[in-house]
Image 1 (cartoon, rainbow, N blue to C red):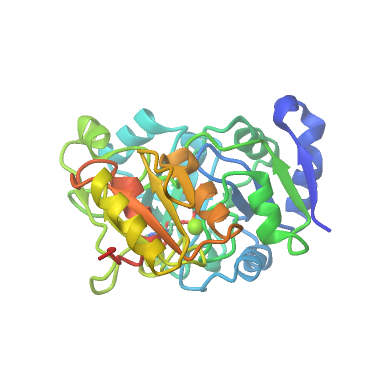
Image 2: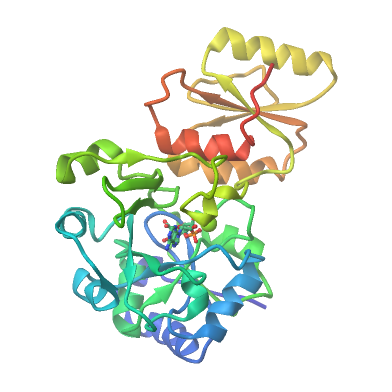
Length: 329
Ligand code: TXA
Ligand code: MG
């Protein structure tokens, strides 16, 4: 039912986008690739279209969407109280995998985009398909990740199709997304600015441009500022356990699971031939591997994380959520 258009080799062909643009203008929702993960887009001023996103994903209504625009200039039409630091971030990281939380100008977006907040998350994606789509549409696109809520974000058009077939009319297939995890979300409405969701743009890179930045990955805390952070995410069906990236420790864990007559998958920088399944660990492959875990016969998934908590902050954040903070013991 859901149609897929392969844009990979025709990235600049105008006709490739005209169908998507027409559907979006008619209040439909369309999935498209960004450099981070696939997004599920609706015109951000169209309340009914945006509502279709929440329905297709099964997304709680209190979790606001990210708005995608084609340039800094367009962004500035939709947000106010833009500090110097915020402009510096736009200049340094856009187009790219950084979402800025800024005050939304009143009554420009559909209410359900911002879930009633006065702020909005906004970014300029760098993927040529996303940019071409935005340039031809000439309207802002509200777009969360194009997965069913609670599933790993899609890094392939096939992932979108798997979750959304029959629920949306069109997927633009631009191949595998390069980064593989969602954008860094940086709240610019507080001082110092605060990372609400770590991503490919790191705290260190941000601090080089705007000075001190706080990192808040506190999802258990009271009233998380990023509503999405309170939900468990990215969970495959078999339980995921964190384990320290230590070859001997992991080998012992594999033996332990086997002794219970169970099958184990390991996600790690190292190879574990003794495991039943063995996935290399990187941002680009993480979600694809978690999805594969739902298609194989496995009882438990071990996710290896570095003892150094400053390393791979974004990957650690996603694995902690997939594991619901459980450690193997
Ligand atoms: O890389 C990405 O950001 C992808 C691609 C498609 O752009 N999009 C994405 O959207 O990951 P989504 O909806 O899955 O995640 C948006 C996150 C959620 O955690 C949400 O709570 C937070 O951004 N967010 C959105 N608006 C916010 C706001 N006004 N204040 C605080 N957090 C906000
Ligand atoms: Mg998401």
